[in-house]
Length: 116
Image 1 (cartoon, rainbow, N blue to C red):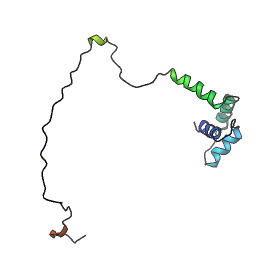
Image 2: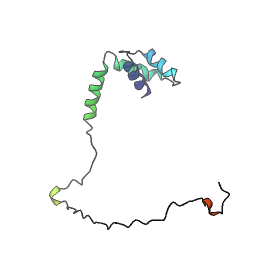
Image 3: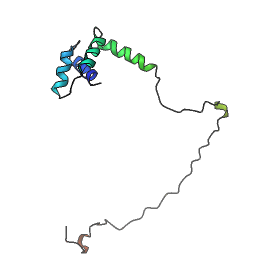
Image 4: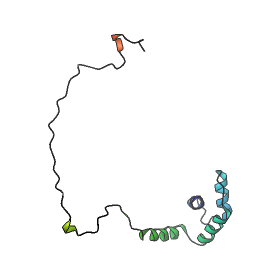
């Protein structure tokens, strides 16, 4: 993943076709160790492809997985599913209690403390 990220950053930075040496230089500049075999395979797989082509190809693969989240029903018939009725209970408004001014948690001028 680090190799792909460095490759994409180089492309976004203006290098339309980064070489293995470019990716290795970028990763080593931030102290990341490079796996030469992984990097070589990556560069071979991406050779001659533009970023927009790669992104389009990748989004096509993601579309196969579907999206969204939700619900996993039990596979039953929707007509058989019970319908839950939502009841909204109104709560009576609570009265506000006037505490007669501010409360000093630390004792304030009432003593019992060192005045801090």
